[in-house]
Length: 344
Ligand SMILES: NC(=O)C1=CN([C@@H]2O[C@H](COP(=O)(O)OP(=O)(O)OC[C@H]3O[C@@H](n4cnc5c(N)ncnc54)[C@H](OP(=O)(O)O)[C@@H]3O)[C@@H](O)[C@H]2O)C=CC1
Ligand SMILES: CCCCCC(=O)/C=C/[C@H]1[C@H](O)CC(=O)[C@@H]1CCCCCCC(=O)O
Image (cartoon, rainbow, N blue to C red; front, top):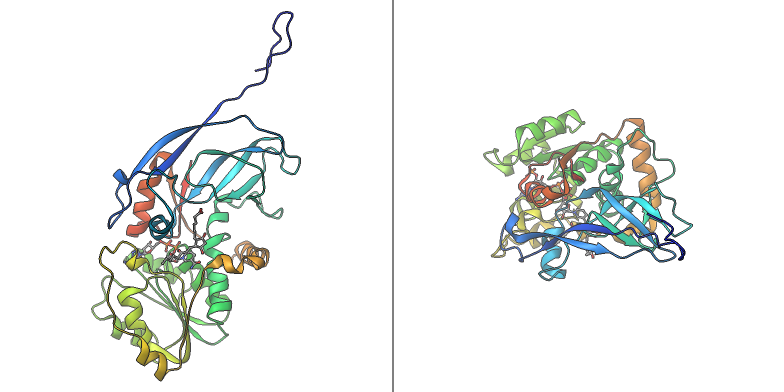
């Protein structure tokens, strides 16, 4: 607080902010444990000209954090990740206090930015729409579905699309975009209530991959003529079986391999050459950020479909920053329906 000291110059306005952060205490071995994380405090410096102070309002837990922690992080680093944050103080004329942005500043409650790494929420974002959707259906996972389906799979009206992890953040958008695009869509998920949700949001066929007696038979029954497009979020055994159900010239978008992220011993074949050659398949891995030169187009399309009611969303919201590790582990276990979000 500013105050005048008797006779001297006015005292400086000092606002000390302490951020809570989650660090990777110990590299994950197999399935992550809450003991692999540690919560710490970070004192933030005072703002310099051009800087902003932000507070995270919603944070995202995503599957990529598991493989990327192994590839890119060392023990003691703050966990990687994105947030929707509110500007609480600004010494940058381009950013007003109270505005909301998407940032990529890891598992932190507060942080300082020079504004260069921030994406303002679109001006057309309606007040009625949860801002957390900028981390899900209208954010990175939604864009993954959009570019993966339309650009990687090159999906066309009248085709049949298969998607796994279908009740999650990416998969639930894939299925609905396939319907918007005039396709038949088959999806699978890991519980009966998720399967019921898939039917509710318009999937033509849906099944619980954990309880089917024979995946091969189930895939054949769901689409006896096979699949034109396979949007693979899971990899491993599921993908090895599904590849044999592709139609001639089928296209596979290799988006993720969540069934393999926690493996301590790498899974072995079967090998894919025979179906690839016999059916002249195309299989392409992709990272959504390679399409971010068209990010605005994707966000605009997804937002429009949400507002028209054609693209439904569900969020699994965990309250409190302190529960982030549990929410992350829960998401890897399949406890989320739709996008897993943390509300600080
Ligand atoms: N390439 C890219 O640019 C991107 C790739 N991805 C990938 O997309 C996939 C989905 O991500 P996202 O939508 O954010 O996550 P989800 O919201 O789908 O959450 C993960 C889901 O994966 C399912 N799952 C977990 N373990 C297994 C398993 N062993 N076999 C089958 N399913 C499993 C669980 O659902 P269930 O109950 O059905 O088992 C769980 O809910 C991930 O592989 C991720 O890495 C995501 C974003 C960008
Ligand atoms: C074999 C691993 C497959 C992982 C697939 C996946 O989920 C990829 C996700 C990326 C998504 O396309 C956009 C991202 O931001 C994800 C990668 C995040 C990398 C984090 C880099 C570390 C940092 O933020 O500093």
